[in-house]
Image (cartoon, rainbow, N blue to C red):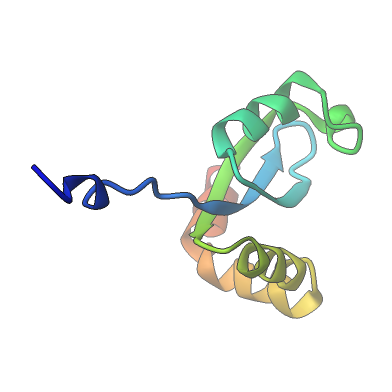
Length: 101
């Protein structure tokens, strides 16, 4: 059908993600274009800064259409104000984790 090639568009997203270490509950915040690959890289020890704390679990991610939006969000979440927001956003996750220990 003429023009149908316009109906199918590749959706490209950038992901801001939060990992938590199984070893010491430390958090890591990053962004990537390929969340699955990046998560595997963290757990294989390819990333120098996260290697000592592996294995990691993915506890949260957000998707953005523009790289700059993802970068801005990552930078914000790494601030004190962003950290407080994360604790409010993931309140039940953190509460349930404490009550199980």
